[in-house]
Image (cartoon, rainbow, N blue to C red; front, side, top):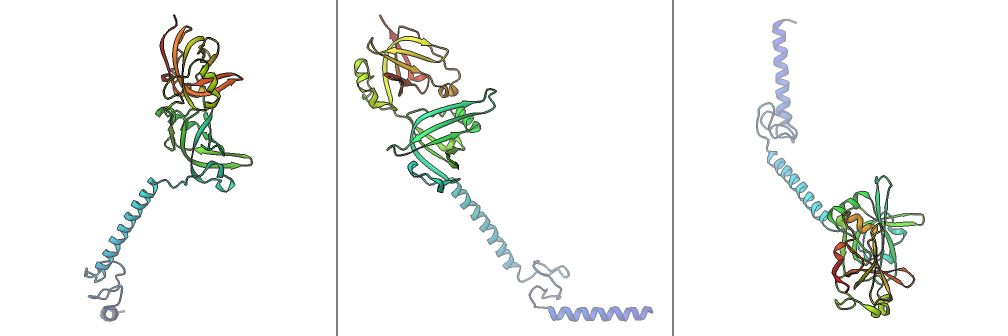
Length: 298
């Protein structure tokens, strides 16, 4: 092909292209100036003309960004709320498997378990409905136990509590799994059955069975101390003994605790009342602060 033929061919192509561009002018997605295809871009890549739909696109883009921000804000607000429904312990059954729920009740037992090599530890709380219709175990595993130790959030027998967790059911095994220390709220009784006065002497043995599981306040003279196993006996009327025991789980939260009492001292003790053996009541203090030396027997 000669040079002249090539030039005529190029001119012909340009005319066809221009003609096609002219046909496309004003069509959606094409440049109204030169007719080139623009698509969703806001400016033509050929003549750099601004597209009339660019304003609408910006509005859509801004609206989309605002929509995403609003959605994130709503998710944040929802996350701060408690999505776990409050369920009566007596009503918990298989339909709640894997569900997140909240319960309220009273801690009636605390078990502490730990590996010989200290690689894991676990607390098991027995929580009962205040009205006594139902109870459930709440298991707290190593990581959450360590969180509780760091915050000194000590669950003890007799505490009222609010707990949020997930229900685990497999076969006959059912428990509530506490996954964060922030999901455990404890309420400790400060009012005592005797209006703030210690239960003493024969009066104590007349009423103690009525107050098992409650926080009580007693005083008496130390008779015997076993520092190795963290318990001691006091008598309240020179005839009856009362056992005071520092539980394993209390020592877990206060590893530095020691029994700084000796026989002959008069002590005041606050704690949860239980029964160590038939006819022998037992006080379970929640910390070393529940034991106070007030004098010496003459």
